[in-house]
Image 1: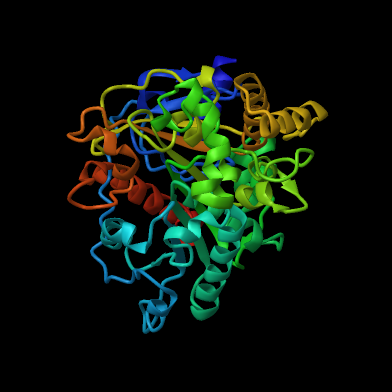
Image 2: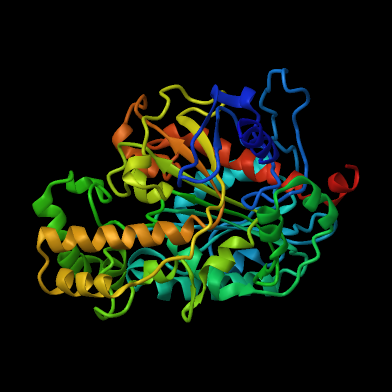
Length: 459
C-alpha cells in the first residue's frame, strides 16, 4: 500500500524528497494519500494537472532547485476594459493563451496593476492578460449569478476579437473566484478537444480514474482550458464558525450577520450566507458544487488541466482558511512556519486527488433547517443548517483534484492585511504578497510549458 501511494504521488508530480518532512500526509478528504511539497508543484498527469508524463526533475536523490522562468520577451499583456485589447495581436507576437484576471468585492481592474506587471515579465508573449472590468465596485452586490453572466459575456467578446487565442486560464481573487466559477459554466461546451497530446501516453501514466477524468475534455469559450486559480476565495460561503473572520467567532455576531448582510451587500450577501432563494430550494453555492439545471458547474471546473487554491491560514479578516481551501474543520492542521525557497510566505503545497462521491444533495432535513434558519435565526438553527450545507458542498467539489497552497503572513510587517497581501492590491502597502504572485506566475508558466506540443512530442 505504501508503494502504491508512493507511485501515485510521483505520477502527480511529487516525490518524497520534495516534501517538507519526506513524509506523505493523508488525503485532505480522507481519500488517497497526498504529498505536502516544499517547492513549486511540478506538472502532473493527474486530474488536477493533466499534462502527460512531463517531469522537470532528474534523479530521485538529487536536490531540486527552483528554475527561473523569467521571460525576457516582448510585453503582450493588457489591462482594464475591453477596448484595450484591440490591436494587441500583430505580426509574429500573437498570443494564444488568454489569462483572465477577476477582482473581488468592491474592487476594480486597478487591483491587478502589480500582478499584471509581474505576469508580463514572467509569462512572455504567449499570454494575453486581461483584467475584467464588467463587475466593478457595487456591481459585485448584484449576485454571483448576475456577475458571472456578465463576466462570461465579457470573456466571449475578448475571444471573438482575438483570433489567435487557443487556450484560456483564470486567476481570481476573493469573491471573483465565485464569479469565475459561474462564468465558466456559462462558457462551457462538451465539444471534443484535440490538444495535440497522446491519449496513449495518458493511459500509461495515470490511474484509470484519472485517465477517464482527463479524457472528459471540453472547451471554455471555445478554447482549451488550462488553469483555474483562486486567491482567498470563499468557495463554501462565509457562514459558520470563523468563515468570516472579522466577526471574531463571536456567536451573537455570527447569528446576526446572515439576516443583516443583504442590507449592505444585496443579493450577493444572501448567497454567501446561503440564505438565498426559497426554503425548499438549495442555495446557489450548493448548486454550484454540481451539474444542475442552472449550469454544468462541476463539468466546467473539471475540464481545466490544473485547479489551484491559494488560502490564507490566518490574519485574513474577510475569508477563513477553511472556506478558501475547501477543507473541513478537522482537516486544518498547523502549517509550517518556514516559507518555501524563493516564495516568501508560501508555506505549504498539497495535492488533493479526486475523491469518489455521489455529489451534493439537499435532503428534506436541509430544507427544514434552511427554513428555520431564515425564519428563526437562532444559533442552533443556524449551526445545523450551515453544517449540512458545508458538508454537501465539500462532497461535491472534492470530486475534482485540487492543488492547495497555504499562505501565511505571520512574519509580515502588516499581517492583518493578508486578504489584500495575497494578490498585492497595492504595490507599496501589500507588497508582502510578492512571493505569492511569483509562485502563481511560475505555476502558470510551468503548466504552459508542460502543455506545449513540441515538448510532448519529444517524450
